[in-house]
Structures are given as C-alpha cells and as structure tokens.
Amino acid sequence: MTQQVRRERILGAAIDCLAVSGWHGTTLAAIAQEAGISRGLISYHFAGRDDLYSAVLESVATEVFAAGSAEMQPDIDAATTAEGKLRAYITGNLRFIAAHRREMAALNELMPNLRTPEGKPRFGSEAEEPIIAGTALLFEYGVSTGEFRQGDSRFLALALRRCMDGAAVRIVADETFDVEGYGASLEQLFLDGVRV
View 1 (cartoon, rainbow, N blue to C red):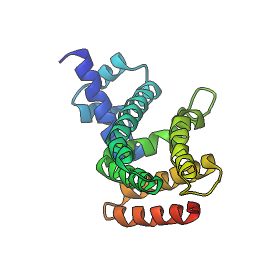
View 2: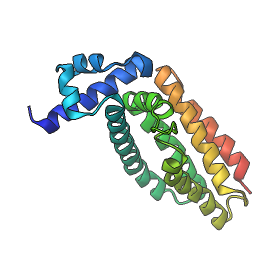
View 3: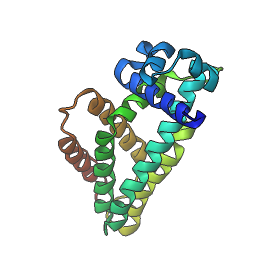
C-alpha cells in the first residue's frame, strides 16, 4: 500500500469514526482499527490527533464545499429569475447535505471542537466568508431585477446559512427528517421576507 493510499485510508477511517462516535468517542486507536492498520502508522503520517483532525477538516471541507458548489451551480444558473435561483440554491444545498450525511456528521463534530493553539476555532468566520458573500449575491441579484426589496444582503445570507447549518445537524441526526418539506418552508420564509 502506497503512503498516499494509506493516508487517504486513515482520513476516511477518521471521518467514519467521527460520524459514528463523535468528537469525544473517537480515538486514534479506534481510527487505526477502522483503517485496519497499527496506531503507529497514524503517527507516521500525522503529528498527532490535532494534525489528523486538521487534515480531515481540510479534506472534507474542501471536497464537500467544492463538490456542493459544482453540483448546485448548474441549477442556479439555469433559473431565469431571482426567485428561481434562490429556490435552486436552497433545494440544492439541502439535497447535497442529505446525500453526504457521513461527511456532514464529521464536519458537525470537527468545526466547533477543533481549535488553534490560541483556542480559536480552526474553521472560523473568515473561512465562511466566501460562502456568505456568494449567498449574498443571490439577494443582490433579486434587488437588481426588481423581484426583491432592498435589504442587507449579508444579514440575509448569514440567516440563510444558519438555517442550512441547523438543517445539516437535523439531517445527520434523523434519517427521517423531511428534507423536502424543510426546504419548501425555508424557501417560503425567505421569499415572503424579500419579495417586493
């Protein structure tokens, strides 16, 4: 097994363990067992638990956010109205989250718990900025077409992202959660709030 393949196997095992056992229940020994390797091999590839978790966070966040954007963007672009684009954004986000429960579960554990040596979150508000800015553009587009009334697009984008984050927690925790129903309610809530 090559070093890169082993490293990827360790990252995958860490994601699985975090998704099932959570932050406090995941140990290097459990990750090694899940990966089918010795614990010492983890130390060969990663400086410790924080280094491994940082690599997991970077890997999952990069993969999930890039894949999510690539998957949703065609539907957003195809919509001919601001309302259609906002609906496509909400629906696409929620469907993507539901299709990637394992990765979302790992992110839900890592993002609030993984800290810098100074005690600050590794994935803080500055890392989220591109997502907020991109979401704000949807609301600004609606204002430019006359479909949406003027408002603070950044506040709207932040509120919508928090609704998505809350949904991600519920979707991961409850496989029976009505993703489509939640999406329809969320669309109605925001469209009622921004329509002219």
